[in-house]
Image (tube, rainbow, N blue to C red; front, top):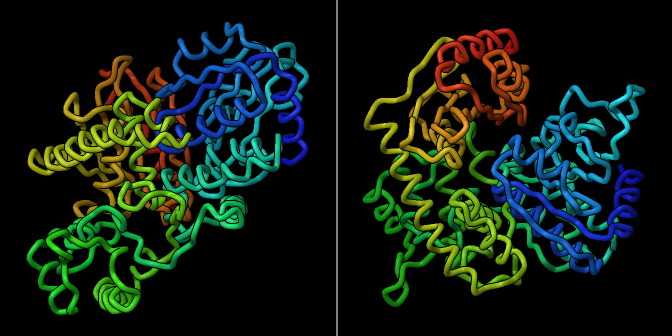
Length: 460
């Protein structure tokens, strides 16, 4: 990997100009920001474009680009065989295109693609390193002083839930955590792993806890107030609601101990573990905690405003006002999406899979997030994958999510989505635990039949 990183770094130094293409989620925006800043520091003329997926139009834009180098971040690995030009660097972590092999001796294999992906080096891109992580490692190979960008790779990893399986970041992500910590940009806390430590009023921090749920507190507003009272923890300070990080260490310790008793020993490792803070970020902005920073970026990218997320990653605090509008819209849409699924009883269950069809009621850019939230909400079975459909401009968007314990039993959603989609005239891919596809609208039932067959054959 280091050899290939060094070779790619030389390509970047030698490039006349660069086209950067990156994904629109938190990982993609973080990756795009790292690439953007790296190119700027090299003094290269460059352009940044954000794409929600690699479409035929995106492939054409890459192949016909007039820039001497195209740098594709958090995208591209699944479409390597579609690229026909020289001068491409891919820093990605999704499962690679099986039709493309490095150094194969066939006539169409001599395109100059430098493919930097953990799967190439025997690692798992679903939890060992993310797209922003691979992009950062290349940036660090360009210039070790780019270590100040390591914290953005942590945002990307947390945004892709790479800390979920082990209640913290491991493997190559751990190297990046250590880089950011040593540079003074990151503090590793051992704390409850719920969302909203910096910005949610403490009663809502407890009320909206969902992974895992806290018996008696999750979805129980009055129960949360009673809990705080029983713990002797005041909810407000001068009329303002306190947040979790406002509590004294003694208050947090008492509350944490009781909450872990409530969730029980089986769920304790999911409820408590590593959390990541950025001490140089202002308090209360949603940028000081990695989970909240990632949500700010997601709310930009999913609502067609990835550029605002890029500005934030570049340190432009004036972009926070625009981001807050996106985040408010994101919260409203996610909340209404969850209610829509529940109120209309959309969730259906087969023997080996469960699924819902959101139609045009849920944006295709967030249906995967919603599927993951439904899976962790306690409203559905966790022992089978969930499949979600949403309308998109070029067909039906499919998002698939699964509990990591299913992956340990042999499930690979990336291969399931890719195979099933191709059999119905679509395309797909992703990770073992989270993947997606685009299929013709009239092929949903056939697609589900194929997915169920594939899942049943994989899971022991």
